[in-house]
Length: 120
Image 1 (cartoon, helix red, strand yellow):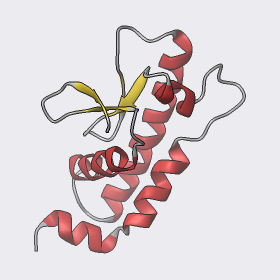
Image 2 (tube, rainbow, N blue to C red):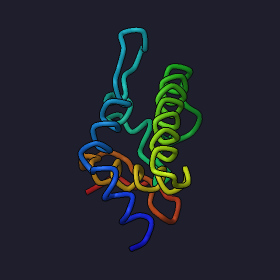
Image 3 (cartoon, rainbow, N blue to C red):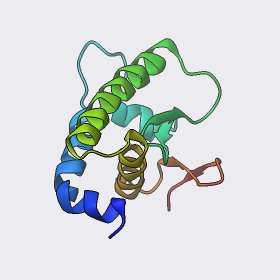
């Protein structure tokens, strides 16, 4: 059994998805929230498990939002990796795959070739 399959047996998909949803929380202190940034095409999900800027340089609000969410995601990914005795990169890829799968149509995701595409 390969490491991804063993990891999936230890880390349930619902747990991973709940973590991703939980890390996408918003607070009133941000001028823009994650769902707004995604629906406006400012940020999108990447195969590496982190948010990325879809076009150009983000505004300071969007950059702050992305940094906070990506930092929180990395911290959770590290905990999961350590708890499952696996490499961080494996967890990041699994989380990226799940985040892209959960992305609603019309929002941007980064393709394996590195291009931003609107999910259909």
